[in-house]
Length: 238
Image (cartoon, rainbow, N blue to C red; front, side, top):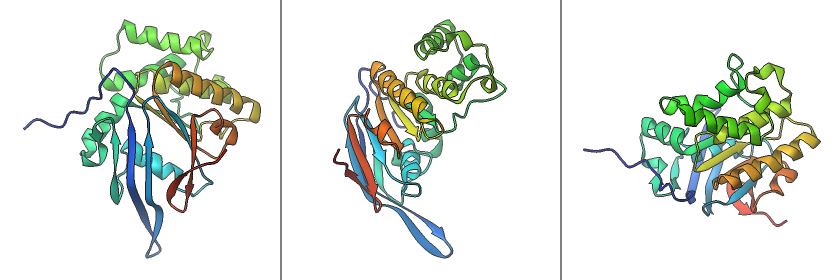
């Protein structure tokens, strides 16, 4: 019997739907509820921020959206694919093909050059060809770091490393980009620059963007803003 179709239509970014997500963890013999009926619909190509303080469940929510973890109940649907109905191997394959990540602490591999870090997501999908290297070069040019392609990450500033991380998240042309506190490790001026660059890059690539953050500066660059409130997602008045 053939497996599920894990391919999203290539003509547009996917719709993202979170339906009644519930997630809890056992702590000291008691269940700590993190998400309690969280629901959200995001249109194709939309840029959305989800605000919340530390411990409010932002990272848990991202882990559910990308299929790293599964909810206790509820569903996550990207395009026409229900991630909660897939096996772990299928979710990993889907994630590599359709989702890009931007992390707070960059997560660049120190033993690889800037260009090699960019090409890594493509290598995970298969062989890297000349067109892939050309795309990586174009993205480095867009983030202003083409001249640092052969540099190792420890020779870059924090802002430069995050710009490389933005390019890496987009190099495999993902339909959905997830960002976990992408400006949280930067000073205010650099955080503003990275926030603008992230929003513009994803829009230019016609992808859907979900950012979890506590930064109002970053949230102000998004199309809509939500916040986590006692395990639920509510729209934020701004």
